[in-house]
Structure formats: structure tokens, C-alpha cells
Length: 79
Image (cartoon, rainbow, N blue to C red; front, side):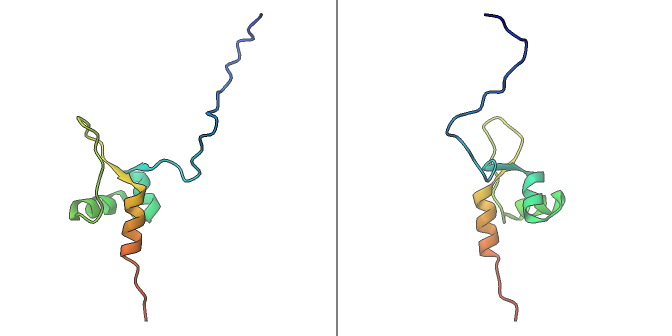
């Protein structure tokens, strides 16, 4: 059996996430909400949006579900 040297990309079977990852970076979360990165940081510092940190890690992630909750809780009707 001869190998051609071409690496085939393996695809996970039965696993798909059409919405993308659940945890977003601050930058991705800011883009999701239409904010600047600094605007996102200020929302986190105010306690409006919680962050996820892995033990021993410094990087902060935002849960997509928290962003959805933030959007729902800040909806208003303008008259």
C-alpha cells in the first residue's frame, strides 16, 4: 500500500454546532453585541456580563448564553 503524502482532513461525525463556540473571547463577544472591546470590558467591570476563567488562566471568556440573557433583559419599548 503506497501513501501519496496527502494529508486528509478528518471530519467529526455527528457533531455540529451551527451557532459556533459557546465561549467567546472579549473581542468576539464585543462584535456579537456591536460594542468596542473597551465597551465590552466596561460592561464586564460593571458586573453587567459575567466572565468565565479557567483555573490558573488569565484569559476571560464570555458565555454566549449570558450575552443572550443580557440582550433579553435590556430590551425596552420606545414610545
